[in-house]
Length: 287
Ligand code: C2E
Ligand code: MG
Ligand code: MG
Ligand code: MG
Image 1 (tube, protein in one colour):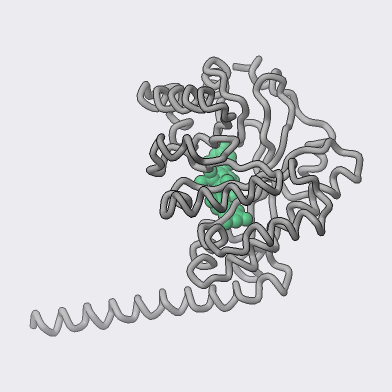
Image 2 (spheres, protein in one colour):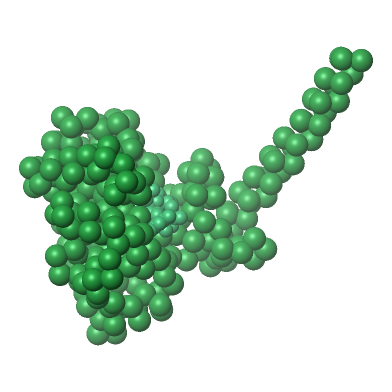
């Protein structure tokens, strides 16, 4: 009886597995065509300077407008894109699209802000990243100084020496580099010293508890301290509350990104925000 039950359990498990595998296969097949079917798009989230409340740039965030599933978030397809290698053409598209968009806003008379694009580890290690970046800059005519590439610690710590080389090549184009989700990886401070990065993006998980948990607050102030000592700027990710904003002001964080100021927006909505930016001072005054 027991064996039979186990057998049935296994059959059930197999059916579940198959269903799951099939769904992934379907998604993978759809993703293969997403680019050519123009189903991928970028949303843009402002980066706001704390001192003067100006929008200094934005981060391009990938979205997939799936015909049946609706708007699919990157968490649900980037790992798949990474596994299949599709992230390389998708990443190249995102890079060019973001650069073009930044120039388009400028041509509409909007402020010339920075444009940040996320890289995946596969893209970072692909060897021809500097070429792809140079091509995107050339085709869009975006000044390199306005392009920022966001890397993660884990991406660079796999092969720190090789990563430093790639980073130096990228820096050679004249662009900005930042370390995304900073504090969640395992980058050693010794390497940080050698990375040619400009900015640390303090991970949202520390920001979330910053006004309630002394240890989160200590991590954030320490990151800001180290950054200042190394001559790097800091930006806080995932800022949602006035209390968090107040804390960040007090410890002299340079900039913030988060729902408190704005969610990531479609290009047209972002243009409107850029044309009439809400005042950060006003947000702070409501604390
Ligand atoms: P990330 O680069 O750390 O981006 C920040 C994420 O936090 C975004 O999620 C953003 O929508 C979200 N966020 C911003 N402010 C807040 C807030 O106040 N509260 C909360 N709860 N969330 C906030 P999203 O757009 O879902 O992207 C998730 C991740 O997917 C990104 O994390 C990035 O690692 C990856 N990703 C997005 N676009 C691209 C891309 O073009 N290429 C690559 N390789 N990865 C991308
Ligand atoms: Mg990012
Ligand atoms: Mg992040
Ligand atoms: Mg993240």
